[in-house]
Length: 239
Ligand SMILES: NC(=O)CC[C@H](N)C(=O)O
Image (cartoon, rainbow, N blue to C red):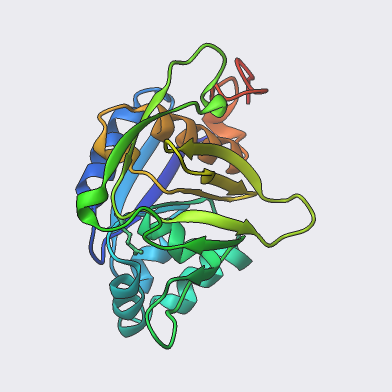
């Protein structure tokens, strides 16, 4: 069996690209039998080399305009919704992966979609209202301590618009005096977080997601016997 090689792209039109790549590199140490390539993606050709993709934070309106100009919007939609490759969006990336967004600029903004949710952009206000909150992310596994969520002009999921229960809520935050907000969701191959794990130095969400990528790529090859994921329900599972 040939060794398993996985190429993970990070959409690099703007926003927190190098931070994601740094944490992906660290997370990849959890999967020593897999060869990972991490690739900055700016063209449809580069996207076509990827098995999985991260869409970073930044500004979703700008990202959509640049993606359109570079001919990337349709290939991204195909990547997420037709080829069903694993994709993770953080903050503006979550906005891009939503089917609907409110608080958009006049005339709306283009989205990639894939998550049957409506996001509310900039839920907590402007840059100066950025905050950090300890989150209980059960999917990280039993007994894991809280995860420091960094929220910067963050969106939240204001409504799940899929009635079939395909959208799983994986994390919430509750600010004092406010309602609980949904800040992490997954629908099949698509994962989104309102917060920025790449800015924390805490590798756990990246390691969990890479474990999912390895699993999704379904691996025979070297993946056989690989222990991945400490997520609920798959602790110690051998793929
Ligand atoms: N930190 C971020 O990614 C901010 C997201 C930005 N407010 C948007 O709606 O696109």
